[in-house]
Amino acid sequence: MRRYGKHTDEDDIRSRPNRKGNRPRTHIRPKHEDSVEGMVLTVDRGRLTCLVEDRIVLAMKARELGRKAAVVGDRVDIVGDLSGKKDTLARIVRIAERTSVLRRTADDDDPFERVIVANADQMAVVTALADPEPRPRLIDRCLVAAFDGGLTPLLVMTKSDLASPDKLLELYGHLDIPYVVTSREELENGDAVGRVRELLAGRITAFVGHSGVGKTTLVNALVPEERRRVTGHVNAVTGRGRHTTTSALALPLADTDDWVIDTPGLRSFGLHHVDPSRVILAFPDLVPGTEGCPRACSHDEPDCALDAWVAEGHADPARLYSLRRLLSTRERTDGD
Image 1 (cartoon, helix red, strand yellow):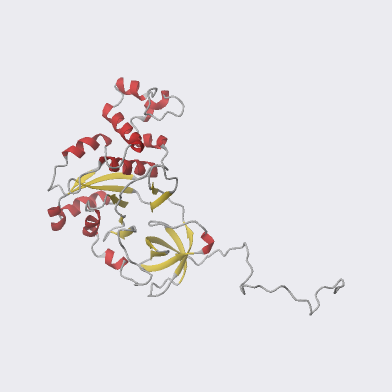
Image 2: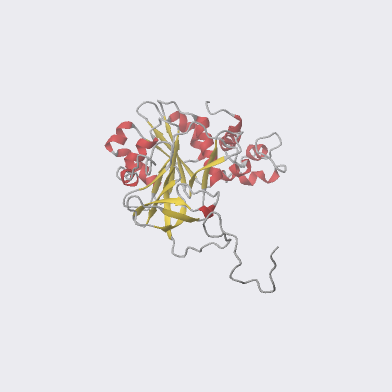
């Protein structure tokens, strides 16, 4: 056996080679001080289309982010080729803290939540008045997700030429949710676009709704040119820039700082992730009445102090009914 003396720096000592032929790993990560801020517009097969200044840039998530995923609406830091030219690819190295998150689960028993949109201010729940018929329980679930995620809800009713909105307005009137009613003719001649845009001013709005309610038609009427600009870089193999109903897409409204986000059509809206105690915060007029509630009160049980408080005339009974309808939505099926 060969022995070495005190000096182990002889020229004939060989170090163990790196079998992979790459540099050794280190816990020291680059600071990426040259990164540029961008916004994620859409995500498709691991490729993220981002807006960097006035350019559309294709990027991928850097390995150092680990399992953390960027979604539509995220503010991100990007490095690499930011020219936006064809066949270039940048890297997302940081994801900024989110101001709001719109999430859902596949069903109420599914523990895995899906983040749909980040940093939106408003959720526009789009429902047709006919063809297909309105699904109030699905609307309720969307409203609960909006309240839980910190988004302001907006109700958009389409196809008023086929049915009256009176029944839905009676059902949701006590929630004090802003709403707009549109018809096919108004969308075609542009009359409805102006009314909808007034409710989007100063906000990032995520449009959600059941398939076939006219959600994407409405979004296209709001931003007809921007969709083509964002989705113009298409690769037949990778699907880069391709937008279908399987992915969300953020689009800016012309001549404003407002944004709309078109999301895939919903079949269900699971609420496994929602903390019921947060729903009451959407009813500030009822919050004072909860002071006498037992600990961990769900506000939908016999001992709830809200019953007596509302009976004394402190709030409208219809508001309490609306609260409990939303709280009980997890026990109901979406097909109601």
